[in-house]
Image (tube, rainbow, N blue to C red; front, side, top):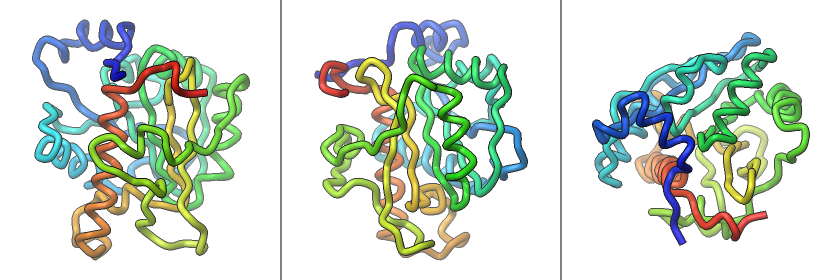
Amino acid sequence: MIRRVPLLFFLFLSVCGFAQSGTYSLAVLQYRGGGDWYANPTALPNLSQFCRDELGMKIGESAFVDVGSPELFNYPFVHMTGHGNVVFNSRDKDNLRSYLLGGGFLHIDDNYGMYPYIRPQLAELFPDKELVEVPFDHPVYHMKYDFPDGLPKIHEHDGLPPRGYGIFHEGRLILFYSHESDLGDGWEDPAVHNDPPEIRLKALRMGANLVQYAFMGEDETTQP
């Protein structure tokens, strides 16, 4: 059973005009703490173009949005990346929590080095929820493209396998954290990292799955 974006979030989109125009945009999350939220500048524009070309999605130009801004609710899919420190103040946490519980989706892509900083922030964001590994049979790995072994490995750092972690709310995956994968690097322009075409394609396809899941979701009764 496939379900659409939850009604609460659809109402936010309607107020902002996206539902009427039939278009929407993906956004990069701006946060505090000194981490380079602006890393991989060509990543989200390229993923948006891939979703337009391959999935037929009506996605506009990508944008930037502050974690504490009400503008966050304009974007059904928000991407967060960086290498270093992350700090959410109380307003940031309240805003981001409301966004996610109301139907939004956050993809955190660890660009290497974010792990020790983001974990405490997520624990404070959702003290009643755990960041758990997303099983390989979860629909996020089997939307338009099939990834039976979970996240693809795009860049090597510590010789560790890629891992996809998530936070669930009422059966819905609301936050996906990609670790030891570097999906965003694979979305960048080919000349940035000189990745082979087949590696970039894996990264873009996995990203497209995330975007598609954010908009279509699944039957809420099938998840923990």
